[in-house]
Picture (spheres, rainbow, N blue to C red):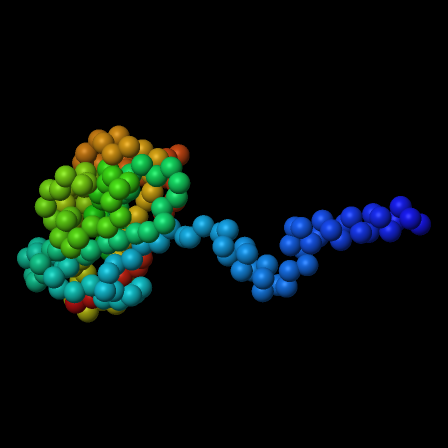
Amino acid sequence: MTIRVVALVSMFGVLIACGGLLSLGEQAARAQQTKPEAFTVTVPGMAEAAFLTTKNASTDPGCGGGNISPPIQWSHPPAGTKSFAITMVDPDGQKGLGSIHWVAYGIPASITSLPAGVGTSSSKDLIAGKNSAGKAIYRGPCPPVGEQPHHYIIGVYALDLAPGAIEPGLTREAFLAAIRGHSLNESSVVLRYAR
């Protein structure tokens, strides 16, 4: 009987030491403190599913845009991140086959945002890949007039590859093949555009 009492007292002490008798609210708060923040991507000034403006649209004939890439920022990248990459894809484009509007990579881990327009000109902070038109530049949206709004998925990849590890001018497919096994995490935001 004495051994059982000692064992129970010992177990009670372990529970207290480990926080086993904390209320559910206290346990949740403690778990929240130890849980790392999620890798997150935003477009400053635009909520999820907001509409891109004509300044972001293509300058191709009939599109009427300014071809300015939207600003992008990201936070809480995973440990071990050495560089970032960005893609902008319209899964509704080309009658559901999808259109690639932007591929950029080799962005140093010290950078956590890109200003508007950086995809439209050369930059020391990124390496350009090819869009669906075969050009190593941002290409703004230009969906057919009267179609439902197209969705534009801007994804940011945290990579364990140093800037410059991937050759310039890759298509999205070649880029994805190059980062296989090197993506630590990806986060995205979806915007829309219609004409």
